Length: 337
Image 1 (cartoon, rainbow, N blue to C red):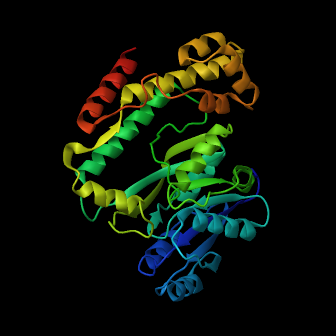
Image 2 (image 1 turned 60 degrees about the vertical axis):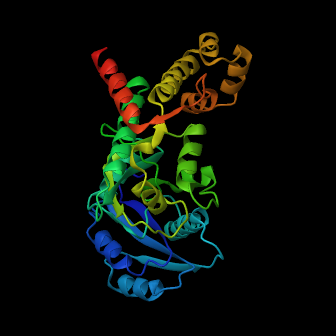
Image 3 (image 1 turned 120 degrees about the horizontal axis):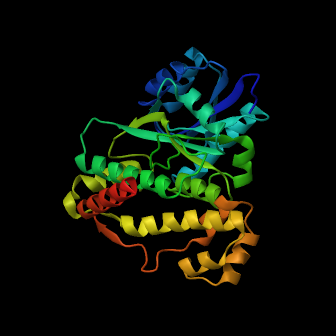
């Protein structure tokens, strides 16, 4: 990114039958603080059967920033294919270096979203912002799950700190609030054509090739808490499933996750100092195997993400209430230490 001229940004948005959501989205985009940023909007209409095209054209005609609208037709909803098409649209709009920011048509970025994302991209290769539900139907169980995973990620960065992480962080991995350079997006090969989970996969892949992934709570996008979305098994489906879930919900066991975090920290140290024997014993692999993985990794981040296996007893699932107590105990112990 240039430190002198304006930062060029393409805001990439796939939309499937979102005529009702588009006016609020464009209103939020109009409120963005664009100081030092040359921003454009790339709206990808994905097989829309409603009035999205007409609404989009009307919003674009009144927008205060350039808007590109393209159409694609696919027989079945595929979030990854649509999101990748929107990002390619953004690449074409930039026609050179710049940042690609991803969000959703049923979402609304905070006014300082551009500033937070640009600042984050100066510290890291991929910035994942926080996604906040717009609460039309309160959901105490979802609140607890999000708070649990936020606490787990905070524990991660006390066990395994990295210099590019934000001071205020979170657990999300969502294409509704994601940013990276054109160069890095191309290097990753883009979003895979997955029906769901394409965003988490891209973020995972970025870490595994050694890119610095920053989860930055200063970057906020508000998203719908609707129960019926455009993609099966998306966020709306998860909320709908939880509506009747009660206390039966299970989550990752914090002690198993914390084992991985400690081994990630060990792996970074081993890579930086060429000391692999102790790490091999700790993770149950041979030294030759560990050295072989290190040889194929370009940096300590890639090595840590690639070499650490599942915990010795596997990744257990436990009841949410038990997990909340466990992560509190682990966090208190770390703080006391």
